[in-house]
Amino acid sequence: MFTVAALYHFTRFQDPAALRAPLLEHAPAQAGRGSLLLAGEGINGTIAGTRPGIDAMLAHIRALPGCETLTWKESTAGAMPFGRMKVRLKREIVTMGQPDVDPRAGTGHYVEPADWNALITAPDVAVIDTRNSYETAIGTFAGAVDPGTASFRDFPHWWQQNRHRFHNKRIAMFCTGGIRCEKSTNYLLGQGVPEVYHLKGGILNYLEAVPVNQSLWQGACFVFDQRVSVEHGLREGPHSLCHACRRPLAPEDLTRPEYEPGVQCRLCADAFPPDRREAFRERQRQITLARARGTRHLGRSD
Image (tube, rainbow, N blue to C red; front, top):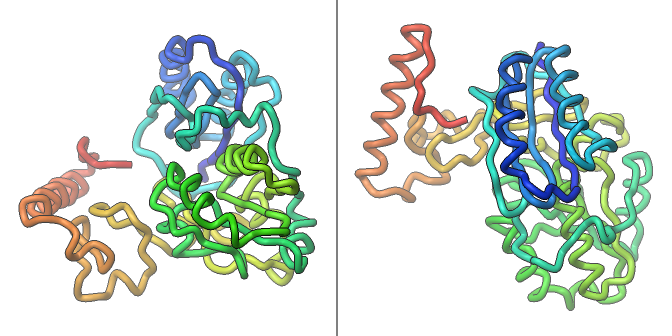
């Protein structure tokens, strides 16, 4: 079993580029793989490896400037869920495109998973899922409002168009691990919303802490690695990924006539021109040949 650690931390990095090479060098030495984002506002990502390797990687990250209080959420995977280690430099560790938003200046009230059900069932509370539509499609909380956004950058526009729906309501927000809520709750506070809450540790924390028979969660939670989804207890879910449109597929989607592995699914059967689709077929042929040789196709996305 591999240990998977999802993490983020808002802090001020004066020179995030200088942190990239040491992270890449440290990960292979500890058998670590995954994806990390670095920006002037902090670090975000998911890493996987052996227990000693993850412990060493987390110790290295906690030694970065301002990261002493870093927290993370752990789960497990039966197979390595990443093909390699990637550390990328970004303008934001989660892109909202709002330069005045700064979670370090204040966020909504954190709500522990044990207290979440009582909050979101209160009659004066509106619950908003801050994730994107391909994520909400496979699971969400009962009664949650789905903004239907294609990216987190779309959320501020959606709020401006829909804020009238939430007059005199307390707002409770949630996302996968908590990072999007750090920004979205700060944004709503800046918009004058007086009472804003968010689920501490996100859906992952809730699925680990709340028993199934007490849960208000419906479906599975999309995750950004080869597991694709997790369920209660953070067990690996049943979903796979369409490697054309990158959206999650349920087992029944794989039996539909539109499905062609690596090429298309019911969600994107009409989305790509013939030349792109033929390129997908060639990529899939190379992946299949690499598997038959017992090697890994270098052009594969993870």
